[in-house]
Each structure stands twice: as C-alpha cells, then as structure tokens.
Image (cartoon, rainbow over all chains, first blue to last red; front, side, top):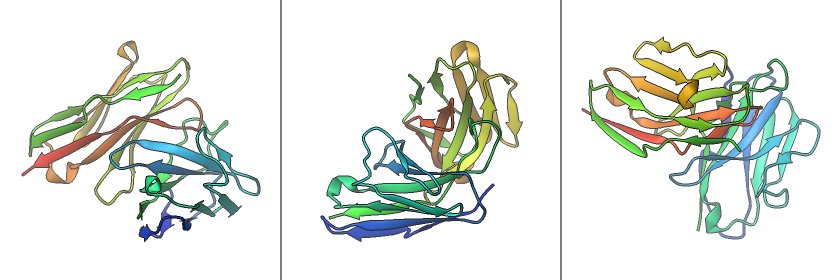
Amino acid sequence: SAVISQKPSRDICQRGTSLTIQCQVDSQVTMMFWYRQQPGQSLTLIATANQGSEATYESGFVIDKFPISRPNLTFSTLTVSNMSPEDSSIYLCSVAPSGPGQGAGNIQYFGAGTRLSVL
Amino acid sequence: AQKVTQAQTEISVVEKEDVTLDCVYETRDTTYYLFWYKQPPSGELVFLIRRNSFDEQNEISGRYSWNFQKSTSSFNFTITASQVVDSAVYFCALAGTYKYIFGTGTRLKVLA
C-alpha cells in the first residue's frame, strides 16, 4: 500500500483565481492520477501524471485548465485555473504502485481529497 | 464501451441487519479487474477488494463477502451484521487497463 498526503484538504476560492493542489506519496510510485468528484457524483479521471513528461489528459479535460506537474516519483501537483463555480468539487490524487505488465488492474490508493468551493 | 452500474443510490438499514450492494458491469475485454472501495465521510477512498476476471471464487473477509458471477456480469458486496461504522459511500470499479471506470456509488446508512 501507499500513504498519500494531499494539501490543502479544503479551500474556498474566488471566481477567476487558481488553486494548486499537492500530492505527496511516502514511496516511489510509477503511476499517479488526478480525479474529480463533483457533489454527489462518481469519480472522473482528469489525467495521468507522468514523471518527467506531460500529463495524459482524458476527454473533456485540457492542460490549460488543469496543468499538472510531476517532478519526481513521489510528488505531483494539479492546478485548477481560472476557476468558476462549476469547478466546485472534490479533487483526489491516487497512486498505483508498480505492478506487472502495463499496470492493468493495479490497486489504486487514494488521498483524502481536496474539497474546493468556488464563489 | 465499459460501464459500471450501481442501481442502488442509497440504502438504509438498522444495525445488525445484513445488506447487499449490487454492482453490474459491461466490458468486451476478456481480462479485466473489479474493485470495491469505501468512501467514509472523511473523503478518502479505502480499497476493499480486487478480483480478476478469471477468478470467480467468492471471497469472505470478516463481515464482508463478495459474490462474483461472470454469467450475470455482477460483483455484489454483502455486509453481514452491519454496524454504524459501515456507513459510507461504496464504489464499484472496473479496469481493463490501468484506468478505472467507477460506478455512481451506493450510500449506505446504518442506523443505531
């Protein structure tokens, strides 16, 4: 398993500003992911954070809105840019420790999330 | 396309009752993995179980048990003798690759 620390745990932001969320893992991991969970909804994958290269974004999510950094195997940040009330969600970081093959079916371990409210 | 359906939005039970959470999935992959996670009010998703598509053996862990049936594409989760601490949102997920497809979750309320 892995221990994940996510900061901040919650924030209230003004429309048009940006917030950077940090995810720190207690061990080196191959794969890190960022999810969004809108109020009362399921989890949606935003992107896979790749170490040393650009993140891989899912359909509907773009780098200009959600820039991601991954400088090493234990740390990543997600920025929510130019926020609007529609960005009010829980943002979760997850990691999948190295496994066989292409990582199919690897167990993902999640941080406690960042509760973001945009006014 | 892959899909996970958790038809039960919310379930309320009285403590010590048994409860089953349903999960139905769709995939064309022959190799895939199924998961259950618990999300307590604190927000962190807690891993409960992983099954691969070739292992249909049911599993029991304490008060928790899982029933995997490929014939009906279901992976149901039963809590025996429920407790108030079991109150949470439970998510079923499917993965053919490293990407998870989550269901919409079932909120379980266990009343004292």
